[in-house]
Image 1: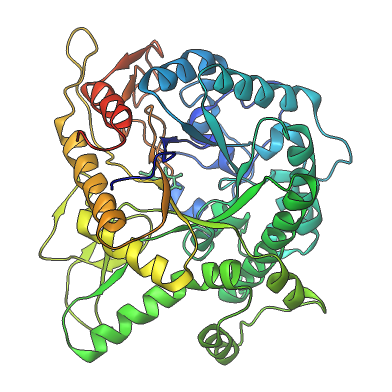
Image 2: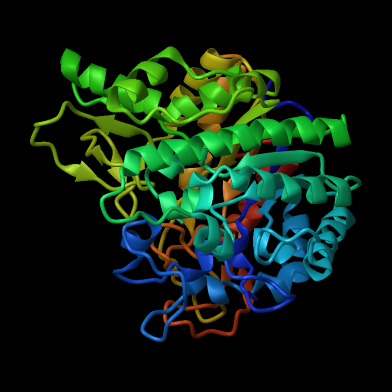
Length: 474
Ligand code: BG6
């Protein structure tokens, strides 16, 4: 009973939120580097405001982040001390191909990740690599228009091929795109899209999504050809939609919301565009242009497993209602009156994780991996840098309990769990540093000051014990 013996416990980060060092190692500029903190961020990440260069009027949190570029040895050692079995990280595309369309990769970038993988090996930590975590070279946006251009498929596959070959001895678990459904909500992050005046934005988003879906299928093919041991997963931002009431119109709205989300995984896991998507996209006139052979490609190389992030459930009401809106992972939903909320207004719903696990497993019958989950909170260290983060422990404990129930009582095939941000890092949605998720506190403050020293929080020892006991001692 309980979690499987080889359950993969660990933590997850993304290059642009922790590495920094964006001008080092011959790295090129990426979309995520030019997302400023402050009031313009939202317009930039949603593609409504085009800012492809850094300027002096803004600050750019990815530039230094928590400087893992120089601290990775120390950080991975701490992950090892917690007993991590797996560390989910992402590759900065621009470290490997600074502009994105070169023929040859950048040796320094390849070397950097090799060092990381070697370090992981020291502590028997298996890497789980996200090939693209909201990451697109700026050059590919300027010269090609980002993922709305089909050429991106080739550039992405060139990246994949280099990674699969170069790291063959180190990595067998891969994710093709982080939160692929985020294209619909933050298209600049998800697909390097900045919209032109008068452009049909929905059309551009679904065209870009189609290119990513084809790229994902071809990457899966390539991964299996290069190393039959490779396991490739999709990744989406999950969280089931609840109807606000049992009014059929609310129930219908919730179903539509779930379908919009599942669309991507339906294609990646089942291998074809689901009929609801065909009808609705055609009706709206945004069905993507396909090339002959695309359908066959999607069908031939579905993913091996399904991974997702879960922070909260969503609550949905029929249009025209007067319900108050809730915050949450860039998705709009109404406030669920039965839930508590984080300091950032995100609902807290551990049972929602069990519900989501069941729904996803019922739908696809493939192994599942929870690759993000956690609580973003303000931490206040004492004079020794120690944070008593019982609120974080409570959040994680209840979510792990819910996963356990899904495994033990519902028979869901769950292979691993990587909590989000095991070390504090910068927030994707707001660019803030004060929104912390880690077991490890980083002395980096909102204004950019700080020593960058690392300190263990109370949750560090707690999570270590969770891993040691394979989720029994919570
Ligand atoms: C997910 C992303 O959307 O949520 C992460 O994959 C992100 O990159 C995480 O950091 C938490 O969101 P935020 O906005 O609190 O950083």
